[in-house]
Image (cartoon, rainbow, N blue to C red; front, side):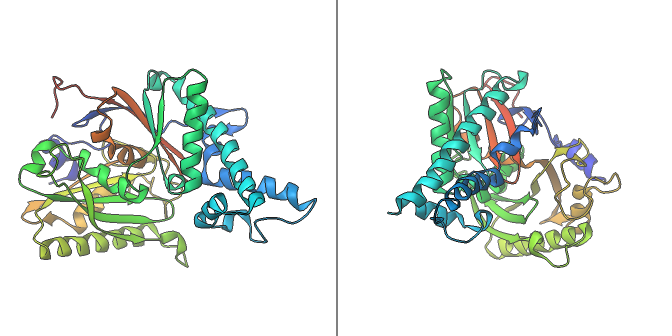
Length: 359
């Protein structure tokens, strides 16, 4: 049975706009101005550029408080230590970068809010690797102050789960509610330009029926960007199948009731048939080929989980990371996510009301 036929019979679709708890109003917007993509102003690289600009000015008149290491090679931990340490000049460099970045982030948020699909947004959560640092947390908080001081009634806050886990936990909200009747866990995959992470997510429905206690039970990561030579697309998919097969065996040994479901977050635009139509340029090999379908390849490699045929559902990675916030955004109607990494992922959601035709 073809993969798309299995999904249709189960009432599931790739990149669906209508999900069990929310409507995906829009995702993967690529906003431009005369200087290029505005998302480039609030990438992890852009923050390092702010630091480097300050260091260059200081080097012209004296010593560099951050030493000789290039700005893009300084660890997040080192930058956080500068913020908390006693070297006032080093702290000043990082604080200055935080302020500049926060101003840019506030400007980018304003641009998003001017888009039709983002109007009336009440809250935005910030995910991605930048959120996993003290500097990132401060920049997010400062950007919220800037926006609210400018008259916007908007909440801007870091995503609750660690970004690595949020990209897996969000997959539980891709699955229809009926699937959890006989299972307590499912497989999730987060595909990125630097690494691929796969994990088993425990739903913990007995502790919290709203999935607010869902957590990563076990995960594996493969940093394909570090491989020499760079892996091909087929090698990457084979490696992912191996990772998932290992997780299935571990779940069986632990007596987890693993659902026959794999939820995947992937960069770019995802078509109804699971094809990646745009945005996969940083993945190993050509993932946008019309002859390649990741869902089909995974089902061929893992045709069954337990006694049932495997179902694979794909969506944009920012959407999936944002979905991890579903149980925590019930106090608003319209909310969004921005993921700050090598680029700027984005998605806007509307909560489905209790009397809607929820699946």
